[in-house]
Length: 81
Image 1 (cartoon, helix red, strand yellow):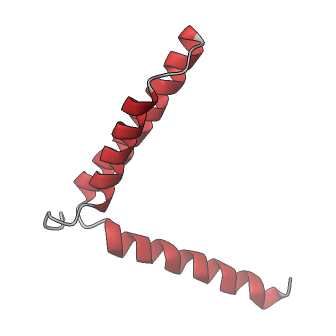
Image 2 (cartoon, one colour; image 1 turned 45 degrees about the vertical axis):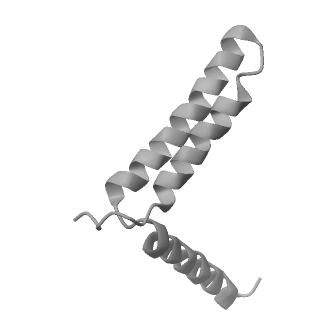
């Protein structure tokens, strides 16, 4: 890897992050609600698995993750300041 390559990769990653922010984070409250929803769903499944040793209800887990993804990608609200 040459010296200049590291900076171009870092610039590309920051450009991707900016693109994600501009496309999906229209309303910070909605986006954070989606992220928290996904984390809670995954955390609950892990806790259930660790406590009981059985596989959690996959349908409920997929539904909660889908709802969180929908909140992240929602574009119907006006941007919050």
